[in-house]
Length: 439
Image (cartoon, rainbow, N blue to C red; front, side, top):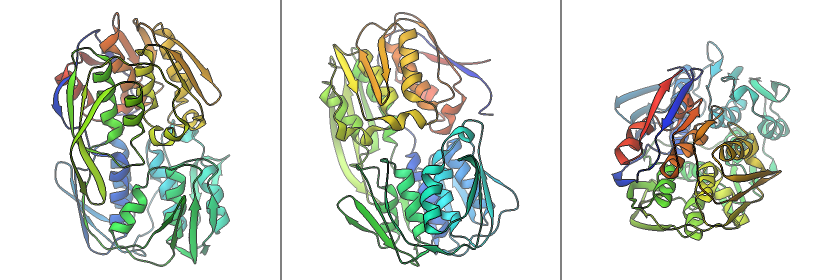
């Protein structure tokens, strides 16, 4: 399916979410399993792999770089690692579609190779800022040409990289990971200091594959010239995908849903903390660790929500979950205020403005600010909103249907396939009445 095709979601009002389900595998971990598995020595077996467009774009990229990747069954991969120096020059540009994770992490990896490469993407990705990765890579000695700071990125091979210390100007796991991955090919030590904690999947997986990573407070460092050893990776269910069902159950009276084997990495649980602070009824069970990543079953039962001032320390821990959190805020009693979330303006869309516009169309008092939003809880009506091709906005507004007064139409939903290919089926099975219409 082309991500350029317009798909409209039609969501009928009412309903509740019940039952037990497992959402697709974590997108961040799926990306990294391919990247690091490809550079490892030996065969890395991956289970729970997310078969969405973004992760498949990463898979296709590494195949184009000479890595043999088998798909023996659904959600399973067998990656034949080529070692740190084993990637080969691609025959054409590397198209990563809509995947910001792919292009930013790959720019770090490819900066350390001996061959030239070019990273491109779809129209949405081509409008996203890349200086946040090209600037630190340039400090390391990389030569990357761009279209005024945006893709395509032309990366010159054979440039000797030197380790640096980099103070991240913003809390971004993608930038941190990009610099660390380049650091594996750099002479000496590379370290990154974060202004606030961000997801640490790269550091955990590097460690799990035998590459020494040092974490000291808010600084992560590694030495160049190490190697990776193949391992088995069991990808947890994605908490970002689980978020939509957590919010849906929290706002719809009579809901009682259990989400299985969800990753609860401490750098990703802002959604649990924020919803709990709003009064949501959330319990964790069956907690365990798989491949260095903590997982649990998450049960959410309906409870009345109240508006809150979202704590600053939770913002980086929930950066991808805010579209859904804004729906919870729209259904809460009182005012919810978010600040310190400028990062949301440069995601797949300007998520702050897109959500504010959509909420207003549905009758909710929502005012965007430079770095956040102010939402006064109210009654969700009906109407036609635009997701702007942003999968998380599309799925967030879908859950609003549970509390809506009439039908909600959501435009431009094709990119839901990038992170949650079976969203419609799972949502309908759980109790939401939603269908796709092809325009």
